[in-house]
Image (cartoon, rainbow, N blue to C red; front, side, top):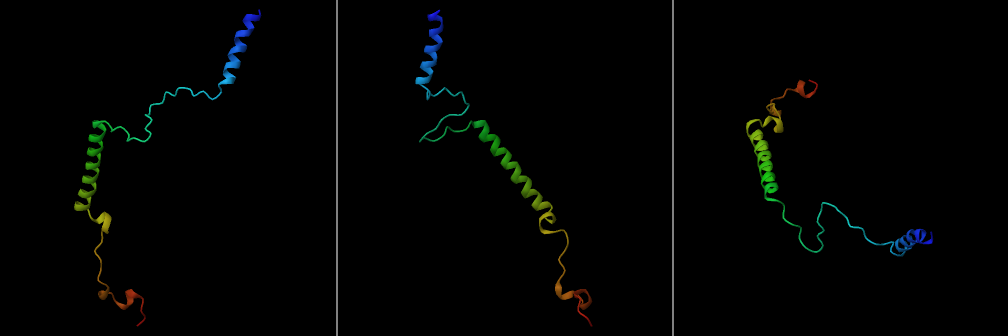
Length: 91
């Protein structure tokens, strides 16, 4: 009976003596300390280039074909053509 109770006690003593033992982490990231990170996969680089190219095409195409969305849709009136009534000046 003493032997059956002694083994768990020894395991507890062993765990108390090494409380700061680092457990193995199974994370999906690499640890890069004082060295550059690994390059991204070629597929990711190609996909990023395609998405960026499409986004810039979309912006520039719509600036070229529909500039009213950015610069305003109405023609600016020359202020010298305004009348005193439009300006609120009493006659």
